[in-house]
Amino acid sequence: MRQRTDVIFVYDGTFDGFLCCVHEYYYSSFNPVEIVSEDNIETSFYQFVTIETDRYKADKVSRAIEEKISPYTVGFLQECLLCYGREKEYHMLWYIIKGFKKGAGIYQLVEDSDVMYLRRAHRHLKREKHLYLGITRFYKANDAYIAVIKPQNKIVPLIAYHFSQRFANQNFMIYDAANKQAFLYNQKQATVVQADNIELPAVEEDEKDMQRLWKLFYDTIAIKERYNPRCRMNFMPKRTWDLLPEMQNCK
Image (tube, rainbow, N blue to C red; front, side, top):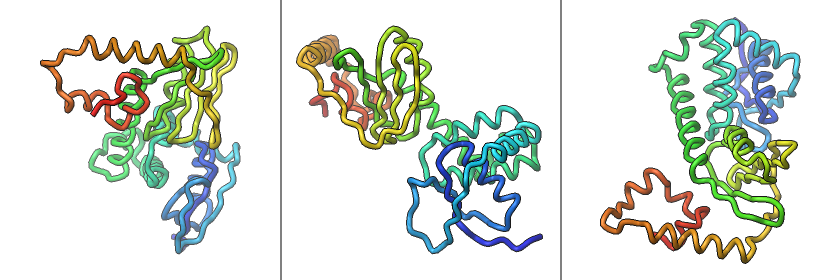
């Protein structure tokens, strides 16, 4: 067995880039103690090794995962890459390494630390996706509708299809202020882009009036005798309140 050198892999943050990190592990003498994207680098005593994205290598690893583990695993790992957490890529690498030996049964090994980490992270991703399908609020700005969200995970690619189908005849943008991503839709084209610096249009007066009416309606239909803030926060986490017109001035 060849001697491996402990390093940190740096990649471009894409799924193809991550698959190239897997390829590098198998065809080099490096042992990645961590795998980080280019925008997530922190000071370390370990040597940084930049992994270039190569579509051929990525396809090769993707086919190997489908054949040796399962086709489902590719989609599962793509969604795991959207999860928050600095360690996810490292656990994904070892999930693949173990999966090549165990096959499709790797997902059922819930006592394994790598499997447990990814399953827990993936469940959180799915729950947050479901949450934002219900609480995403749009406001009108000129000829488009704008929504601002602040999820922990990068859920924009997961909720994009739902809203493009629901508002197929509208121009709109969903901006993830936490992860600096935006989904743009203009009735013909839909795309997810990185948006590190973006200036959102101001809320117009007509929209402010509409938001005040919505809050009045929300407050009016509330049943005071059933007021239960803890229950409300279970379904509508407090960290999302600043983006919801009906929750302004709530404690």
